[in-house]
Length: 137
Image (cartoon, rainbow, N blue to C red):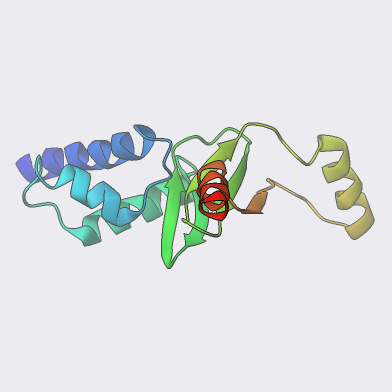
C-alpha cells in the first residue's frame, strides 16, 4: 500500500514540476528538479509519467528541440516559438488558426480536426540583441 501512495506522490510532483515553469521543460529537467526530494526517482519513471500525462491530455508535447522532447503544462490553445539559435521555447498566446479556417479545412479535405498545433521557428529577442551587440562591437 505504501508503494502505491509514494508512486502517486511522485506522479503529482512530476505534473507539478511541468506546470511550475513556462520554460517548456525536458524529462531530464523534471528529473533533476525532483531528484533531491525523491532520491529513489528514476528517469524512466519521469518518462513514463510524462507519456501518460501526454496521452491523457494533462500536458502537451511541444515537440523535439535539440534532440529532447519539450513539454507544456498549459493545455489551453496557444502557439509556440522555437529559437533556432539557443533552443528556447516561448509561448505566444495568440491562436493563428481561427475556428473558421479549421472548419474550412475539415470541409475541403473531409477531415475531423480535434486540435491544432502551430510551431513558429526563428530567432528569439535575446539572441537577436546578442547578434546586434556583436555586430556593433
